[in-house]
Amino acid sequence: MRNFHQYPLGRRTFIAGASKSAIAIGLAPLLQACSNGSNNDNPLAPMGASTYGPLAPVADSTTGLPLLQLPEGFTYASFGWTGDAMSDGTPTPDRHDGMAVVSGQGGASGECVLIRNHERSVIGPGMPLPLIGGGIAPVYDGFAFPGVLAGLGGGTTALKMRAGQLIEDRATLGGTIGNCAGGPTSWGSWLTCEETMTIGSIIGARDHGFVFEVPDPALGAASAVPITDMGLMPHEAVAVDARDSRVYLTEDNSPLSGFYRFTPNDASQQLGALERGGVLEMLAVADRPGIDLGLAVQGESFAVQWVPVPDPVAPPEGLIPPIEGFPAIQGVGRSGPFLQGQANGGASFRRGEGCWYRDGVVYFVDTSGGEAGKGSVWAYVPGDETLTALFVSPDAATADNPDNLTVTPRGALLVCEDGGGISENDALVTGTRMHGIAQDGSAFVFAENNMVLDAALPGRPAIGAGDYRGSEWCGACFDPAGEYLYVNIQTPGVTFAITGPWRQGPF
Image 1: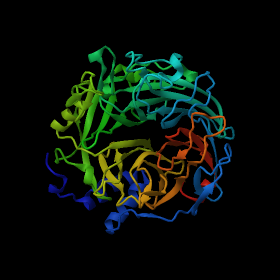
Image 2: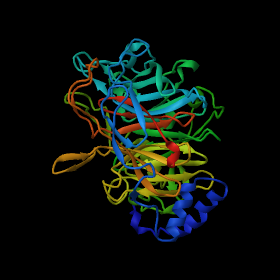
Image 3: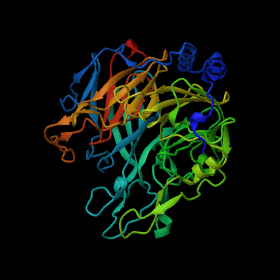
Image 4: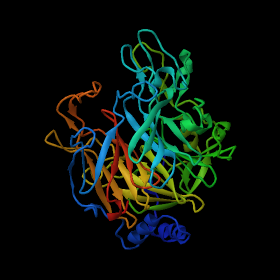
């Protein structure tokens, strides 16, 4: 593969032309900030002070514990802890991950439905919850192997919320693996993504590494049918363009990951339409086949095109046994879709993660991108076919491996960290954080994980004592009214509803 630095990048030319044309039709003020900064040799500002003010520990209204650090005036409540009984009678699974609002109304009630991923893998004998929902919810793969494998633990849960309060929750999909992130559709469903390459059919199970559609429970049950034409790969997140139903997909397969586009055969925007298949393609940079975008610099922009992935379910580069004595079923190396896209000139990233669509722009994260390996945030403009590096972290103190992201009600970006926190002399001094990137390009810290439990939580035996400040934030999303930010901390597994004076800043 040819190296990124072998090509003249010409960032000013691309930004001044392609990105500014996007702004002219009302797209993405962040692109304008990037354009203006680049023309002055001063791209987006590094992390700085927040207009919301400094952070301080704030007590959780549910437990009374100072689990989060937030700016003055912000409050929050925790709910959906691992092990909490759900409305369907089953326990809340652990490893909370990607999440989004799939339906709801703005206005005073703030009522909405969230669908939440649980990044659980295979479940060993004696471990709890072999299947999310205990089989009550639809199950994709119920495979078990006596004495070795009790079940496949991944899946989703749905939460009905009203003004920041949990009204009802239930399991909605089980029997999947590593449901990391995904993305909402505009027709009341969530696309949940498996972050794995597992050829289970070799041992009589089912293959894994797919995307599944999970509707708001009010619209019916999940089909548990994989959308195979979206590819068999370590998926991370998706974003759906409501204008044409195209789905954009990130791949989390370090060090060689692609960014993909799925064009559905059925663009009716009805439940199940995506399962009717479509065409998968991989992003490429025009006239620069095989370019490595993992080392892109903040402010650089590219003209892009799409190259075909003819066989979306092609096997990965290699297979190994997942455990000693087991057949080789676990994929390693490049995914089958990546191999095909790369052969056709597709571009590579380090670790594609969060992905979100808003107002004609698809934003996505390369968690290990940039020279420091601490993460990049990209913006792709369909139609204009431009790709811009909006933010590249120079070090962990600035931003430590961003992961999930969302666009806030007022058009800023909110990005979740997955870097494990910042340590000095082998001691953790800063918990994982959520960062904001405002429309003017300024960046700041909005929240910090402050979760240290000196003892097990009363009434919650699944939640043990421990220092969880290094656990990742994930699933950040706002309710339709823009009053509540819903977000997870993966371990020990909890969801928060945060509210406060949003209009004092860019959110």
